[in-house]
Amino acid sequence: EIVMTQSPGTLSVSPGERATLSCRTSQSVSSNLAWYQQKPGQSPRLLIYGASTRATGIPARFSGSGSGTEFTLTISSLQSEDFAVYYCQRYDNWPTFGQGTKVEVK
Amino acid sequence: QVQLVESGGGVVQPGRSLRLSCAASGFSFSTYGMHWLRQAPGKGLEWVAVIWYDGSSEHYADPVRGRFIISRDNSKNTLYLQMNTLRPEDTAVYYCARDAGEDVLIADYFDYWGQGTQVTVSS
Image (cartoon, rainbow over the protein chains, first blue to last red):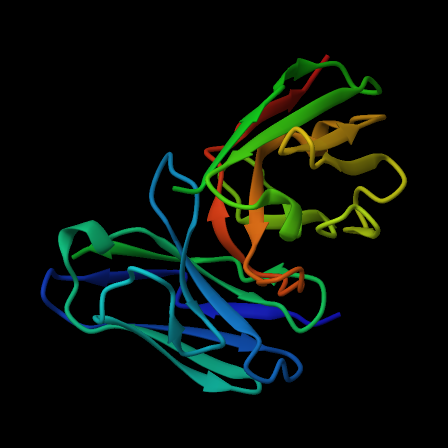
């Protein structure tokens, strides 16, 4: 079973600053990795697929990188609407999610 | 626009059954794989089951295999989840989600989600 580990658990960032979120898998998933954003009381929203491709309508400040076992989601300049929980998900086999990173206001 | 609307959640005793529905609109339902996922209170996301675009194949996560059944009615643009022998650990918000694969392919990630329906298993 592939284990997915997101870090940090909580990231405190000021508006306008850059946020860097990490997702590691215990075995290679190639580029079969997606990122989602979930705000309180809302359903998740697809941000990134294929490790680095932005989904439709996602602002350019969101970018994904990595392949194999190490992946990064970067938010270049945090806006107020970006404070949320972010999940990575592998899809090389049955879908599995990381435990999430909460991005909060510093 | 794509819309997914879940219904059928509620409070149920352990060992009992419940059927969830997901009404889809705004896209060609019969050409997309569909999934159920869930999120326990204060916890992360967990994939539950997938069904192929034509209903010809279904797959389940280990915790629900043998108890839950995913199905679809393409004439009604509706996805279902029959949940049997419910346990307290099945308590969660249940989401239906569209598979992001196009033209009947299964991609196993999710481009549209419903708003979710709460299922609580408690005596």
